[in-house]
Each structure stands twice: as structure tokens, then as C-alpha cells.
Length: 199
Image (cartoon, rainbow, N blue to C red; front, side, top):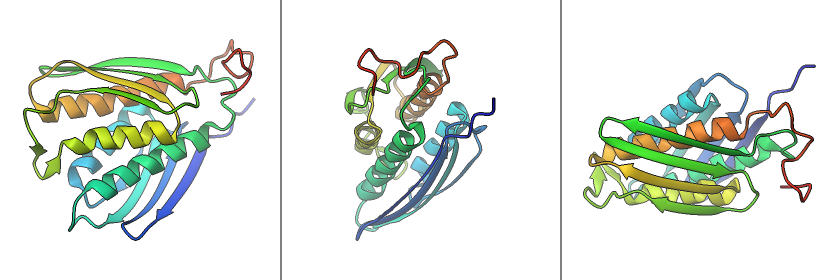
């Protein structure tokens, strides 16, 4: 039996941003990312590569004011696309976790594709307010937008770390690997992985 690719396309246009995003959960980690926030583009490329999801992002935004609107709205679109691509969630594994190291940094991500948006964010990025031109406060905003709009439960915790770039990159990669497990087809599943019968 051939299973169709789980693909979603999302478009969001506001006075602050313009975003077009395509997500294929059954891809091979191919990406084409163009945003006005270079550090976020780099993180999204790593997310695609390590999740195995194909990802296309084309974004514009009012970054002359601040990167916040663009970063948050991309998180919203990625969350919406994930939820749309999963559909009724028949036969998925549902839960996933991953520990990802990057040099001295170690980050754990745990996800539940529960249909309830929750973020527990425990990354210590207080030692450095910026990574290049990127405001590290926006990392939490991105993941909250992702979790709320998927919607899913996401626990993201730093176990070790000193370098903010390493911590954030390990975070994106750990979420990618956790989602790769959670969206995978469970051959033994009898349908939706919930006693309620829906997620």
C-alpha cells in the first residue's frame, strides 16, 4: 500500500509579515529557506535536515523595526503546517524525545502531538542577549508559536551549555529529532493513539 505524503502549505499575510511555507513530513530533509533573519534561516535549515521534513520558507517582514514579528509568524506558520499535514493523526507514534549535544551544550526535547498547545521552555540564554544580530529572547517566542499552533506539548530543556549559539542550535535539532519520531507511522497502532479516539 502506498501512503500519500503528508504535505501542507500555509500562507500568512499581515501588515507586518508575508510568509509562504510548505512542509512535507514524508520528505528527505530537503530545504529552501529564505527569510530576512539569517540566524533563523540557519536554524530552520538544520531543523529540516535533522527531522527529515522537506521545508520551503519564503518570508518578508518589518525587520527594520525588529525581528520579533517575522520570527513569531514563521513559528505560527510552521505550527499550522505541522497540524494540517498530520490531519486526523491516524497511525502516528504521537510521542517523541531526543537528546542533542553540540560541543559543551546538551538539550533535551520531548513532544506530544496531543492537540493541546503547551511549552515548557528551560533554556538558559541569559548570558548572551544576541547571537550576531539575533535577539535570543526570540527563541522562546518561536517555540511558543510552534507549540501553540501545531498544537502540541513541547518540553525543551538545557541540560548543559555555555555558548548560546550551541544551545539554540541543539534546541532546534532536538525538536527536529523528537518530531521525526512523533510523526512516524506506528505499524502496530490501531488508529489514533489516544483512548479518547481523537487528538
